[in-house]
Length: 188
Image 1: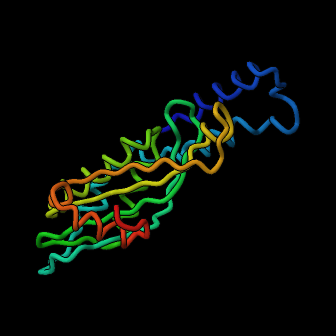
Image 2 (image 1 turned 120 degrees about the vertical axis):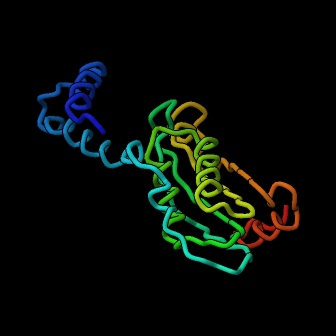
């Protein structure tokens, strides 16, 4: 649970640290606004993906299921700056499927935490494997990191791509090619 009082105190200290007047009209309510914002963008800390993935439906099909272009926003745990992009998920059912919105909710649970993209990709794949027990899962994230865009190297438009494969996707290049083709990345 986010402690908004501590965040308010911390933001006031940060504003003072950069030489600002916390009583200035434009900043007077900023610490409370940031505390409310952090409650929203870090809501995943108290959530578990299994709460979204546990409701399944019987399926006799073992055809690939792909949900692509799931927009996500997260915060880099190294600089506390946003990174954002698209998640693409594929899985091969083994007797059960999940409602398609639940895959997007799974992404949200892990994205709404202080994160690194590599861990986020792996956590999504692991949660789907654990809760759905599919024959395979593949997760790809493409994201732009504000810590690379606004500071440091300052390279706007640069995207980081991470990939996590489990089950059949680890051993079957043809399945991986199908995934890339379906998400529009072409064959790799």
